[in-house]
Image 1 (cartoon, rainbow, N blue to C red):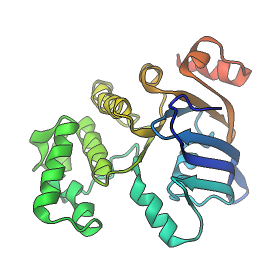
Image 2 (image 1 turned 135 degrees about the vertical axis):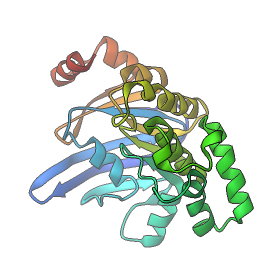
Image 3 (image 1 turned 180 degrees about the vertical axis):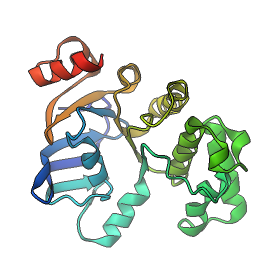
Image 4 (image 1 turned 45 degrees about the horizontal axis):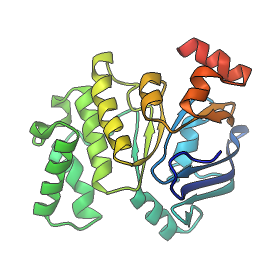
Length: 249
């Protein structure tokens, strides 16, 4: 399907397959994502959603097919992998913050160790990013002193610190209490409106309808149906899609 975002294709997947032992998790995923496009991926548990986005920065190695990120093919070449990982930020269900480091240090660690920024520069960027996600006052606290929603916003700030071209979100609100979900979705909405290329696994359909250019419905390791939010909410074609939507809407 042609992107509605209008940019060049920054993610290209052709026939991507992945096995875990005898279990085939991905059965030939072919899709593209344009620069500036927001794609929401949804589907039942075990449908291959998380495995798919984890292949995009090689947290999982694909077994067959081709993945190209911003013109760089993901393969055995470690230099290619480093280049892709420097351009792709990822936010998980769990916040994965270092509990023994302050919020500031959680964000600046990669800036000083990987990007080799001076401490003053890294600190200034951390404060700027925390302001962007709405929690500048938490800069010197430890993760255990924050709510789940605040920790997830720190995780987003940490991912943004590396100035990625693409952000991947793997059910970023599923571990949060209901009242904390909106504060995280608000940050993600802001990113989408700023033109960040995003792939988001979520069942938060109100948010998805507002920000997504395109939906991908996964089941059994395949893309069963894709289209605009309007297509899915008003006229889904596949019976499997209709059944799933009837259960979550």
